[in-house]
Every structure is written in structure tokens, then in C-alpha cells.
Figure 1: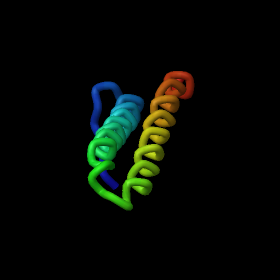
Figure 2 (figure 1 turned 90 degrees about the vertical axis):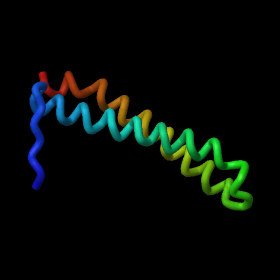
Figure 3 (figure 1 turned 135 degrees about the vertical axis):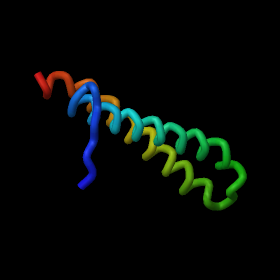
Figure 4 (figure 1 turned 30 degrees about the horizontal axis):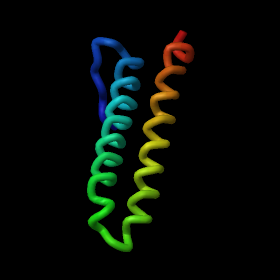
Amino acid sequence: MAGFDSAAGPAGVVTGLIEKAAAELDVMSDAAGEIAPEVGDLSAVLVEAQRIADRAALDLRRLLKRLPQATA
């Protein structure tokens, strides 16, 4: 198992990981939106993947809002 160091402690590590995941999902969603017109028949699948990424990023950000309450 990997160890993590953060000046903000465990909450900082968790927050950082969730923020990074949400940001990467945003990048994926943006890329999907840009290339969707160019993938022909696969555009429906790509648009669905974009929706899933958008929803997951939103859910992760909602989870971050609960983090301070959970650690209090």
C-alpha cells in the first residue's frame, strides 16, 4: 500500500485526490465534447461517456462539501 504525506493531514490527502479525480473527469468530458462530431456512429457512446463523466465530477464535488462535516 502506498503512503501519502500532506501538510494538511489525511483530510488534505483525501481532498486532493477527489479534486484531482474531478478535474480529470472535466478534462475527459471536454475532450469528448470536442471530438464527438468526428467519431461518426460512436458519437452516441461518446456523448453518454461525457454525461457519465460530468455526473461523476459533480458527485465528487458534492462529496467534498461533506468532507469537513465528516472530519469534525
